[in-house]
Length: 566
Image (cartoon, rainbow, N blue to C red; front, top):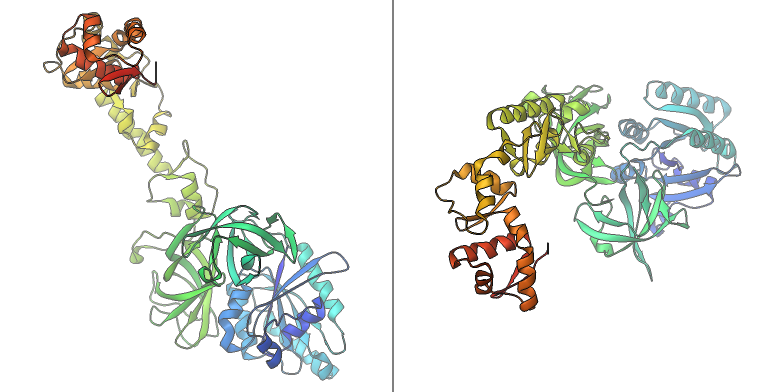
């Protein structure tokens, strides 16, 4: 479903036009209706006779409410630019057009309102003037439609133009993770907290546990409505009203983002491509106080221009922006930048890197996935997706890295196998264990990796010595500790207090243990084991400890009962 946002100068008839199309007055506040001026965002929709749903966000046109206007147009698909035929192109028309451009809106239609108040010659002049201005924009405008809500002229033609735009629009699922920037919060008796917004990325479902990104509070989705209809899932690109369980209306606010926990990279610093408006009076530098708008969120921020000192009007450059509070962002997100000191929009652009690592003097980010991954070592595929906004194919297992890092890891592990003969797998990082599997001729058994299939360790004289010794074994303090350590780690030997036993010896004790439990159902003591095997306490105490380690017995007070592997 496609969302349409109005834009244009104050009192040019945006709300009246939406009401004429939908039958719903988007000015829901009493003050708005009394003053005949939009103050907050308004919402309305209609299903046309041809079966298309036109979903509108009506924004205020007054200069004092630009922040609210930006909240309304962020994330929408189509712009409805409204120009009064009598007044023509005005200051806020120009600023709203710039905002639409830098937020990446690519298609729209122009409504020339109040056409009943001008003659045909003036109307034709307005159309020529507006066409000339829009020829240089980045937005594709389908047409300019003269309208009058008084005479009800042009409304049907405007609806047809909007239908054509909606029918040809395809929702692009860029990152396939749900995110909803909230534009309205209210409560209803018997329902509790309700938030609304335009859903981005992927569907949200009733019963899903979500997180409020700003506070990390958890909530559950009780109900979802789209255009007044209860649905089981909210689809990306649609207006959704979501009933939340677990949070109060005081816990959420406009600008908050609803996300699924651990789906997003939350950051307060990002690198971006900034395009400045050609209408700004001077170049953009790090000097000044700024407000950044992303989604419905707006907050103060600081900015540094990268690789140069400034960005001239109408040009583009890379910048690093530091926010006051973290937001769940992904490369490709659009943002708008305003100069707080002069209350003017200076530009906007696209996020390139949500976790910048390089020093600002040595960076020129371009959003390339390989560049984003460079220098980050080994990442899980999910972490890489959160950082890049793309599905990145693992190079091995579930791991993502650069080809150079993968080759370096293979080489390092190969060198270790050459010099150390065996590698204790437990000492390796998780990604190194997966890389080991890619090395030709390497086998892993008993917790060790080695080249070839024969384990030379098992041929060591110690193995046969302890197997032949049975339960009366030599002390280990005079033996090679490196060999003993490897035999213990591979599970060939079990050791306690300087006394070790072969696994086969422990396995051979099953009949004796069975007999002990038959005579002592509640568990046998060390003394009973010592007597049954005719050994001394010196070997009996380490023996029962090793029986515990292998899982044949479990210590219960002073007795041994059957263990997990019995």
